[in-house]
Image 1 (cartoon, rainbow, N blue to C red):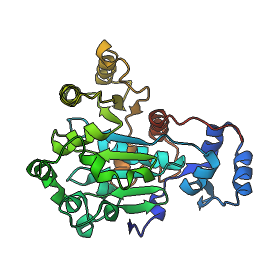
Image 2 (tube, rainbow, N blue to C red):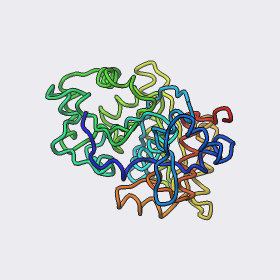
Image 3 (cartoon, one colour):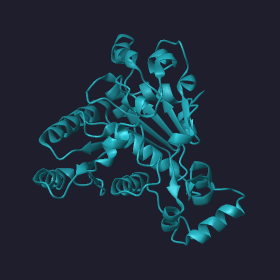
Length: 320
């Protein structure tokens, strides 16, 4: 396993007040519980915060292992941003998370501040030049990354030329490590190819961020049609969910997008949480940060917190 040498700046954080609200107790009760476990909260400025190391014994959440593929046939919908923030948020509740960058553009890898030029990636595993274990970069406690780089663009061809079974590809690839994680998040390109198909067949659930525009709606429709074909061909029932991203209740387009999600064909397919439009997100992306690295309160952070809890079924433990 490779190690990120600049871990402090990317550690996901939760305010003590947020933990108290989640548990339904006072901040003093949270501090007392932490002290009884002989743990000490780190600080950012004057604020104490909870990280993975403290969250795991504090919340004592038993996670049902989950593999999530984030995909939709449309660029710019917020796939990478969602992987980054959902993974970070889950980590603050004590989930051990693996982020897998399945896009040769490597936006997720870059967002985590990792230079993968000299690191092994999926293509090296396929070429038998490395093992899947050696591709893992430990970003910080409880949060790992399998990075990507431009050479991964040939993975689709490798799958085809070597006649690798799509329905077993990720199972065979991740079998040695998947049991070590509570949550695996796969970031995928806005395309339909062998790697995307393999991820669709492997994941426990596909999650699609839908923007309030007609092109995102078309991308979702294409994805739905492709999933129907896969279900028929592989005799599967692929589970997928959609959430409204970059939502603004003040725009007509957002209203139309919301209406499209209430159609009968979408029954049971829509996550209840919508992520509101926020300038804070692109501002953070420019600095290779996500909403959970800082302790700044924000509506966008609240939205991703609710989305993560909904997706993972995170509910408060018994009061402490």
